[in-house]
Amino acid sequence: MPKPIQLQDYGIRLFACRLYNHDYLWFSSYEISKLSAAWPIIHNYALTYSLGDLSYGISTETMPRYEEDLAQIPLYATPAVATQWSHTRITYNAVNTRSLRTDDAPRGINSPDLGWRRYIDPVLAVGDDLKSSLAFSCYLFTFDRRQPKGVTRLGKKGAAIRIYWDEIQDPLAIFRDRPERPTHPVNPLDISGTVKAYDPVSIPPHLILRSAAICDDWFVFARSHQVHVPKRVLDRCQG
Image (cartoon, rainbow, N blue to C red; front, side, top):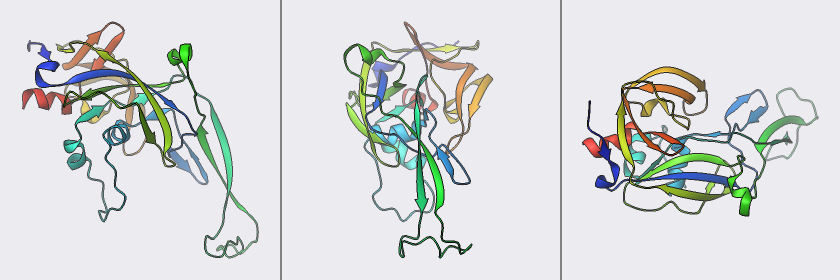
């Protein structure tokens, strides 16, 4: 059985984070015809880019560069999920942005081309409401002893996100050969061991396991937290 790993010996800190969107949050979790909707699950790549302050104003690349980008970001997040949420459906008209008309579409009918978007409603939590389950929750590993920042932006419209966090002191990574269920969604590309059971959610750029039973892998246990240690984090300890 592999020996436990003291993550702090490698300059790694672990935080339990709660994220509150202070504006309508929209990203396209799926699109069917003219309907697009944001599910209450945020992909960990999007979180890592946002919390690590990496973005591209202009890019000449035709394909994403996840491996190159993630390697230079000094932190890594798990996917985030909200167990309770509410949403608003917004109707919009699709018009020609040059002519501002609707009758020059292929069908040639002068009528609005209606579409719909489902936004996740804002959550403005203060005081005792900070424990509300309306928040998105995730875990964050930092590699340069930094603390998470308190505000960021997410989604296609750059919704303001307020972040509250608690540090998990002296995080100890323990190898488990029996199935364990993390208290957070898991990116299947982060798993080093074997998945025994899972509940998948299809969300770009690839699916997320909303819940999973994982064995032969590494975890951090602290109070109610059962945190799966991503392969990308382990590489910093074993590399």
